Length: 175
Image 1 (cartoon, rainbow, N blue to C red):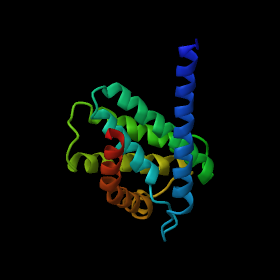
Image 2: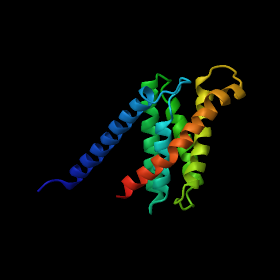
Image 3: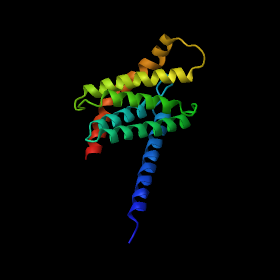
Image 4: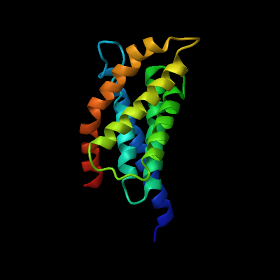
């Protein structure tokens, strides 16, 4: 007779390690393969994290969906910080704040059509890019230049990637 509690803990740890490895591989893809001509990466992990949070918020147990989204945001942020050589916690803080904002804004909404994921991604991307600009750029900076160089292009890329990733993730998680 085996101990079912230790088996349960082992399954949870194995699942978390699997998430971390998957997110690490996606972070590596974002940092290395998804470079744009302007020199920044397409925000793959931001899009995946927000889409995962939206799908979780549309489930029966919204608190569990929000916690899963926050875990993905934390893991994604740490992986991006490690691989992109930014100060540890920069991406994690920006992703967590964007995820929390989207989770609380959508907690009472039904997430079915394409409009809500696009609006959520617009808000999340603006929050994420603004926080990254504040944390990375030392001293004073000009918001118009930051918006032209980072905010607008990254937000547009995130919006372009949102619907395909949202519908693929929803299909994968509900199957």
